[in-house]
Amino acid sequence: MARDLLVEGGIEATTIQGISERSGVHASAVYRRWSSRSEIIEQAVFAGFAQILVRPVGDLRRDLKRFVRAYLAVFDSPAARAAMPALMASYQSAGRSGAPEEWLSVSARPQFMDILVAAGPEAIDQDVDPDDVFDMLLGALIARTLVPTVAARRRPIDVMVDLTVRLLQPASSYDRRLP
Image (spheres, helix red, strand yellow):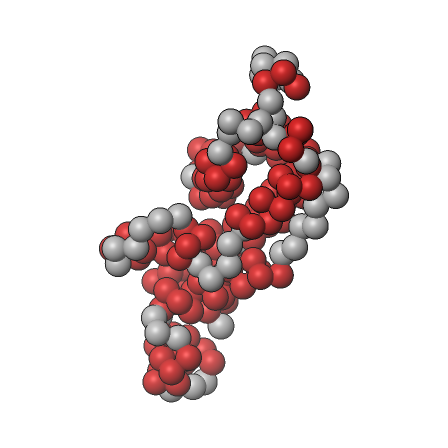
């Protein structure tokens, strides 16, 4: 119900009252299950995170490409594009701190770390903090779906993956010049 309301009417239409009317239950029944509108929207939009499982095969570039495609599909859905700006504002006004995956019930970070482990220690520069690289990648994924000027560029996913690999790999394993 909430996903449909988000796609049809945006965040403004996705209210507890709207959800209860659409689902045919009283608003109090909605509140018994979810404590807030933000929680309902999170579960409606990001339920797909729990279903994404990118099993690494040990090829860093290939695994990262599959990872980026999977999460980009979630972020790029009409419901996610409608919900993300309002959820971010809601989190800030509620005084939440930390990374977005700490707000949501499911995180992509463990899968990213599994990809790095599968690639092997020789593929990852030990002086690079993988959490920093993940944060940059997450920011790029969100920007690609929510920032119109970035989205309009429609750069191939390979560019994002190549840049991520360059951040992770020891400098001696690649040519520092960008394509």
